[in-house]
Each structure stands twice: as structure tokens, then as C-alpha cells.
Image 1 (cartoon, one colour):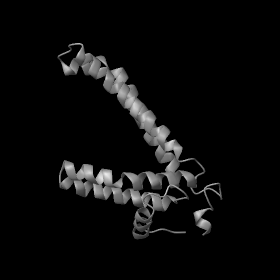
Image 2 (cartoon, rainbow, N blue to C red):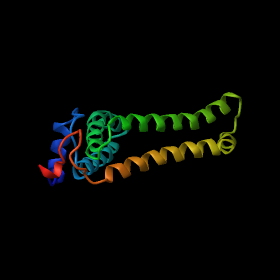
Image 3 (cartoon, helix red, strand yellow):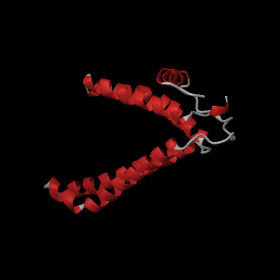
Image 4 (cartoon, helix red, strand yellow):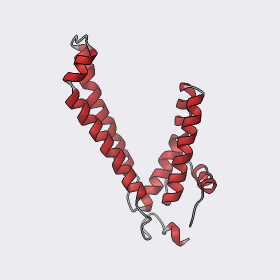
Amino acid sequence: MSVDFITAIKIYFANYANFKGRSTRAEYWWAMLFVFIVGLVAQLFGEKASYIASLALLMPNLAVLTRRYHDIGHSGWWILAQYVLAIAACGFGLSAIVFAVKDGAADLEAVLMANVGKIGLASLVCLAVAIWTIIWCCKPSGPDNKYGPNPWNE
């Protein structure tokens, strides 16, 4: 089933809280282009508009990503694992700075340089999670699986 931009956006909003079934690559990537454009436009209206747009699109983003993972035969729970890993890495990197400042370090540049390894490791983990997500979302639709029939056969 071929999906164009308008059709993908209609599916994106029609299934905003649907975590069952499958989504094709085209459906997912057209939706992400739409989210990117909405984010750019929201930024023109300020930080609050950007936060509101991000919050409004959080549920449909998670739903379409879950369906995309289902399409390649993976559970949507992998998203939670990826988020936990990324948040833990960010927390690890930030904790290095917070504890250094708490211990009385006044020079932020010195604190950053002293903790460059921890911050670098945290950044690499976040980058690895992002690459992992992109690779999975670029995989072609798999055959029929426990999440439903191959969308290309419909």
C-alpha cells in the first residue's frame, strides 16, 4: 500500500492513540516530516508554542513509532527501553556537572572539562539510541507477523 503525505497525516491523526497494528516506512517518515514542519512553525511563535506542539504530538508520535516497530516484528516496548537508556545517559552526564557545582566549583568551563569523559559517554549513548531508532525505522516491512498482516499486501 503506497502512502502519500496527506494520507500519512490522516492516518497519523486517525490512529493518534492506536498502539496496535503496523505502519509502513512511508507512513512513518511522512508523519515525521509533518512533525518536523509543525515544530519549525511552532518555534516561530515562541518557546511556549513549541512546548505545546511537542506535547500535543507526543501520543501520536509514540503510537506511530510503536506501529512502525510492529511492522518490522519488534515489540513497541523497545521504545520504553530506548527512552530509559537515553534518559539514564543524560542523567549520568548532568549529574557529573551538578555534583561538581554542588561541591563548590565556580568555573563552569573547568567543571565541563573535568567531566568531559562522562558527558561524552552520555552523548555517545544518546547518539547510539537515535541511530538504533533510525535504523529500525528504515527497515522494510516484514512478512505477516503477530502484529498483523504485511501492509503492502493490503
